[in-house]
Image (cartoon, rainbow, N blue to C red):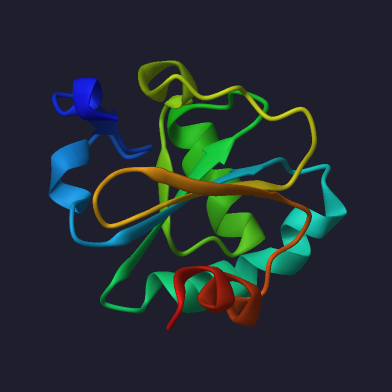
Amino acid sequence: MSGCSKVELEHADGTLKSWDSYRGQWVLVNYWAEWCKPCLEEIPELNQLDKAPDIAVLGVNFDGIEGEALLDLGARMGIEYAMLAQDPASDFGWNIPVALPATFIVGPGGELIETRFGPQTEDDIRTVIGN
């Protein structure tokens, strides 16, 4: 990830945040879609995780929905964490997931620790990150 230090992530609401600003936190990049039932099941768990001071959750819509449509869909689905305007996989050299939901767990130093498929719970994630 060292070559990615200049990556700017655009949130669904149009704000930009540099990838570096997440250093020191665990980042969960979660791929979801409206038609994915397990994605719906894990949203409340991800909302809880995002409230932790050491964890940031970033949602990526698998279907490429953008702008107002994405904000509306996120609100309807109860997503409280930040949603990205575009898939960051190519910026980071990640493979786009073939199954949903998929959660990329990035450590505080910016390194990809693990990719998990299927709905995650707060306990599952805390076991991986060790707190």
